[in-house]
Image (cartoon, rainbow, N blue to C red; front, top):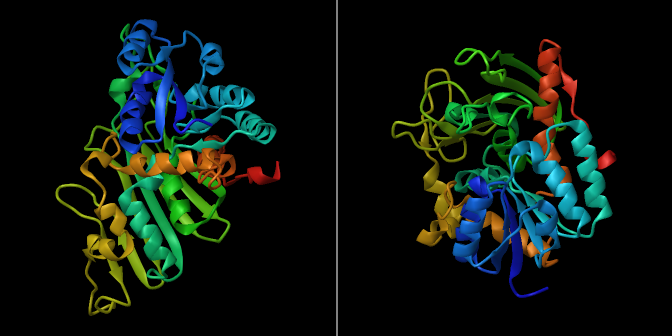
Length: 366
């Protein structure tokens, strides 16, 4: 394999930032692009010194080693299966797939290919998530028995195409977009969701033509017996909060920022005042622990914040490149990627069953 991993990018609305990311991280370059908007695709390719591929098949026939799948969500699994069949490594945007049938096809494609698959769940690479993970691994929270996450993002502007027609975001066909919430919780606790029960606020409140629910509320039970709560809301008019997390353990608690100047915060039994009925504990800055647990994050260069998600993709891409070079396993392989994705697919079944719990299969056993 050449010194630089040669990437083909599918979908420029999301994938365009990958061009800048490769320049900053190094060891990778984009050599081919495909987008259904041919005019824009050719313009971007010319500026990037890359080749424009008019179709997915032509992209896969080009001189590339790996594919970044940044196409609309309904096409993620289809494009991943095609790339794997062509022997191309895959870095797929979330979510991995939208149905159980797609999930099974994706697993089969990975098993039949020698190429690397990784789900690009960049929220797992947020600095605060990594700090919390390392503190959890050090036992600072004791036994964590409850965790929660919220992804609140007013995306109504993305419901409509330029001609006024509804996009895929408005029709509810992708299940619950929950990997940004569930992924970090499972990464921190090294757990897997065993069952999900969910309720939804029906759609149509802001546009009667939009069938997608206003929000979903998921209650999850894990293999380790933990209870997780996840709220996903892409509709409500409100300030964004797309990365809220909380942990509750026997020896500590954590909550991320909420906005209006708030900061990530912790209370730890081994470092702070007693928690009791009459001597109430108080929150302390999470950042106080950053120098001890994530010093390399504090030393990150300014250009690390190259993407729309802070430094997360700056830390994510090198791990994928290392997997492609055979230096380590894929950090979010197809099984872990489906651990993050399947609860959102099965949540729709639970909603249809009025909140009844639905088992989440372990794809390792397929």
